[in-house]
Length: 396
View 1 (cartoon, rainbow, N blue to C red):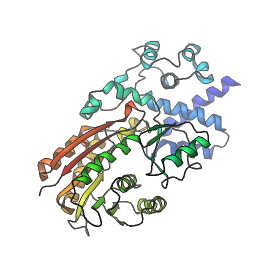
View 2: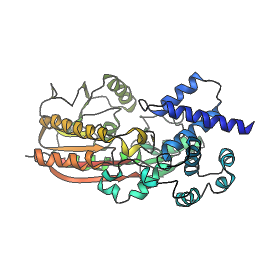
View 3: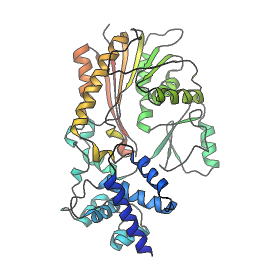
């Protein structure tokens, strides 16, 4: 019976992977499958999901064997604790579940595993990541942690609530570190008390603070434009870092801005302007009035593929070229709305030079912007995302 169950898991995982086309996030895809196939219990869903995600994490590096063999080897590479399913696959693997990845590669055989194949287009990595390419690539075999950013003055409340609920956590600066599957929605008041935000994204607050310090002070605070606002995470970060400011948020999607409004209400952000804007084209209705722009631009998301490893299987150089072109178009349509000596914050969650340094060079060479700082937040050392931030100033 047990053997039949694990064979069933393998067959279901193969079916899901082979039919998945990458057009929606895999967690939506697999939830829909389980919704339509209610025979799977919670334990079944967990095991099948683990097999699928292990394959997405490590499958590119497993270069020999049929699909069954690649699924099993991927699961071994990504599993750090002995368990019943790994024991069923191979008892000797189960005994070695906790050893290092390099030892696991020795066990599987170098002719079967090519770690340099795991991450796509590694030759295009941004410089700071390329310097630690080995550590960065291997980090994708591990599920990142969940991070909360504690809102100012809420630190003791959050720690009290987590302790009372017996939720294991650690503190890193203003961040709470939790295991990825922790559900905090019923424990804390999200957005009002704490924001779910990756550690590297939180650290961009330092860049925002430096840019704010360079702006001449006004009674109502600086005029800040979050031009690709999405869910508003960077706006909330700026709100907590800067405090008094006149905020404008834009995004290409009306539905996203409606969700953002609900989130701002929970977070206590009452005064701001919101409008739909497609920044791939010149924007009507915006004049050169902004002291600061936060441009968290659309990108490959390659710095977050530890959370969405399926993306590694569907990304292409053509997509990278498309994103790079789009980012330059967005820059072209931001620049006319900025005041002289305005602060330009260029953020991505990409690890590719085409989307990072090349975009910064474009601002410097075409528009004469001064580069103040450029930093890659290497989250792969801390089970977090990897992100890029550049701070520039427009000409006088």
